[in-house]
Length: 152
Image (cartoon, rainbow, N blue to C red; front, side, top):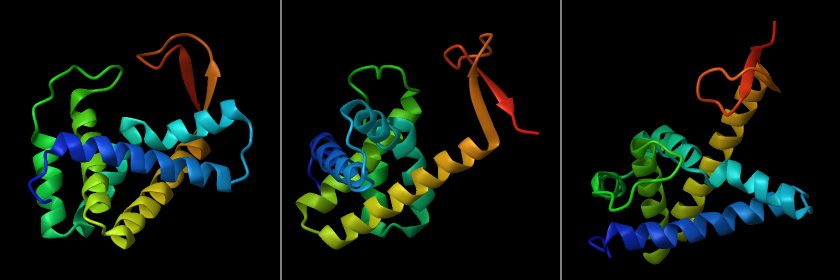
């Protein structure tokens, strides 16, 4: 299992993480399809996964770290859409880790990492929301036509 192709591990890890996120969103009481999707995307987007993985690096075992490095350093065969390639590699490594833990039946460890990731991503979102308000305005930088306004 340790030497399984990291692409395969990422493929299964993506599905497993998505399922856990969908369950998390539903358990929070969300019932509208559009809001379910938008809420889930906050967690499964590459930036969130990369952030979570970087935040838990010090907590990974030697084997887990080795797998993360192998998956992160794998050559990308297709150019990722709408995301920096470095962030994409970190997200792929996160998914590979989840996939590895799932396929090796390390469910307790997998759930520990998933739950910690969910908390980290929620805290990151809450911190960002408390510090800034996004409103329609002039295009500033590359933020999709949204202007950031700091609370005073």
